[in-house]
Length: 258
Image (cartoon, rainbow, N blue to C red; front, side, top):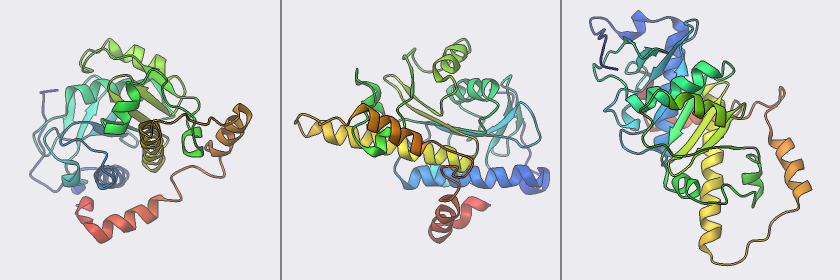
């Protein structure tokens, strides 16, 4: 990831397609929202999105920016081979980010956005033998969830095949002793999946900390609730909320659009 291509003589918006620019704006918004909801870890972790109309290419964060510093202009464009195609910052992308995200983008053509986090609640649940429990309706969204055993920092390309095998056709996965992974057919859907998965982990950590037996719901009720919460053609989870989330960001700091 050190073959950095720096393009700084003109504004980034003037050097990319209108479709890519919109993807960059939404990606910057996603980073800002992850920060707003306390799910970031300084310069670590990553959110990626496919570059529209450029097969095999996706955008990642420059390695050195905090999440609340992300703007549409800052993202690094890479291809599935790890080549840097565009980097206005000169910082390049994180190696582990490339390994994890390229694995999913290469294998799952239904996925446009991938998010990986190291939240306290997510890491706590990732270390629990029981995994994520369907203890409330918030958790039942993720009855079918993937698990990937820890292999160290994701730096080796040969881990990609195991990552995608464990993810399968699911939307989310828990990386054991590591953190969370959420995907989506769009940035709004991926963010919604992450927010809800994080919420489910927070709920579990809170409930288990009460040191009292948990009352588990009936399996048939869990199955029925999970079916209701699955994305459908009529209700793509996250799309309804996205404009409202952008309005929130615009009130806080609209510089993510730059």
